[in-house]
Length: 364
Image (cartoon, rainbow, N blue to C red):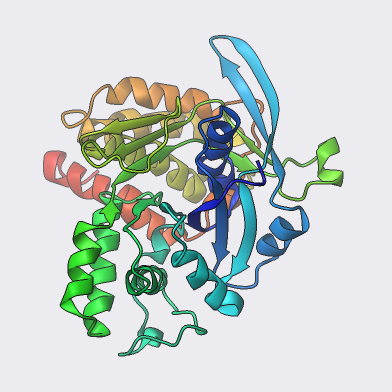
């Protein structure tokens, strides 16, 4: 599959995307319905981009868990990534990918913290060899380079856990475009030729295992649960999307996003605050703890689920399934990893629940 063209530009190459979108693309490539290969962009000179290149873009994903009572323990070799680029050092190379007629998709997972503009981007567009500071400005520069090269529009699939993530991202890109005083014709192209599709992603990826024989030759090895779901609001705009069992192209992802972010991700961030100070290390340890486990169940069913039950389908059943997924004996999902950008995550995942609860029932 190394002969496939580079059709995907991806901002972020962490464990989640590599065990989610990149794995799905690889599986589609292997099914003779090829999507192409992925160019991963890292903002700074992180070790990850170097590892991607040292390993030729290849790595393994271990899928572990229970499905219908049966143990799943599967290892897959993933080869969908072609190379990694460091934006701050190789911005001209990133823009070269942007100008490629082969490019079809732009995928991102920069976390909720990446959805903001930075003063460092200034009042004018930087030169082609200088990367903008913020993610929205980087994306704007990529799309502007593509427009100026006379290439067709692309489809943008943000994977950040934010309501209406593509709409929010477009608004930030347009705000930066206004600051840079970009031409009206480009702004029109941005809204009509680029498809901005809201998404909802759902898969627990625990990262590198503590001990595994493959670690000797694969520093990018990661572990994921069997469950995987990617809702994409793309009906009528499904250009360049690919078919995969985990992908559902729907009219609106809001009901999926609200349920998942409030219940699953809200529970994750709540556990960070409750369990880490007690010295607990993993999600599984937390949910099986004699005090933290019952506390989380009460939080879910007495405070979180009631605030969304009227707006989503099967909130209580989903919460019950979440507790089962958290207790997966095959995953070592570290609370310290979930704690990254904790304050921002609390605002998105828990504060809205708190406000809704107060509006419905008074102070919790």
